[in-house]
Image (tube, rainbow, N blue to C red; front, side, top):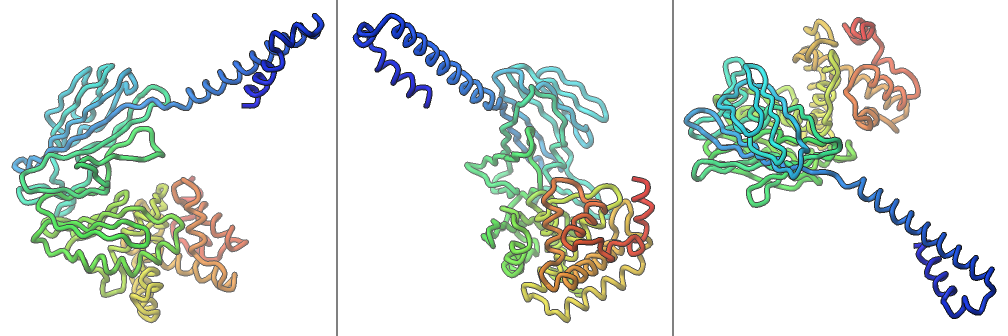
Length: 445
């Protein structure tokens, strides 16, 4: 704008009439100045246009359609790629539990991997995915003639891609279901199409828990989080009880974390599903028979809610940090909301401490029940130490907030650094003597 105004002023002052009244030298200077300003303005405009052009992101469309085939305990998946030039060059993913793989372009398949090189102008890739998957004597993924419950990752394998630099996907998900069936996912659907948005990734795929069949669904907005509880009709799922518990506790979660999850989808069913709880991005599964609050004062539902809210994972050997945080804060949500009393909280912590005695070490490959109980004791000790040292001004909430500032997996060094920043010194609760098995792992890193 500055250059444009200067040029306009110059043109007004250097009109033919005024130039004729001036000396040749003045006329030459005026004309030279005019040319310089016009040239500068052109260069400036070109540079702005260049910056704007550089910020334009190349997009290609990925449209997933999942068709339920209950008679085969399977789904058919069709991936339709739309692109006006060769943006998506290649996709690679595991071939586990897949069959009937076919598609346009160049396709290479074996027992372990699928490699797809789509046509320049897009095309389709199709496969059938077997859904039912055993977990011990029960199932963590299921589809039959009555209903289905599984994760998107079970039928859409996580893929690695090769694309034109900077290209991003516009990803959508739709379903084809038997008559009178409906479906609930972690996504908001518009005209039965869910749009998958994840600004942190250039290539996005559907994720999270899916339940389909003749469903009963209850929805409510609680403390800024849109909650849906969905389960097949006829399963003994306490949808309203779950919403009631979350109405008490999610406001406390919003006080602990600055950015609570925008959506939480809870799916549930009874037999033959696994009798536990499992979280995924913005969604979780919990078995219909799981109590909302167990006799020892813990809550599987709130434990999985904490996993969703934290969105954290751990480096090898440090799963106890994530699991310990989730379990400890599930208790804190109950206590701070008044759902359980302080004496009941102390009883719950004592019960976990007794269970922790059977833990051989803390830093193991995965956090077993006793290891998680031991981790809760560590978190409680750290919480009390910070509260005492700061005279109630700080607590474990501040450590968790500091950890979540960084987009990195949890490990002991990061936990110690976050606690040190809040406390001003290394906490006794995280001394190696109090963390059995962790010094060996730390020394090997």
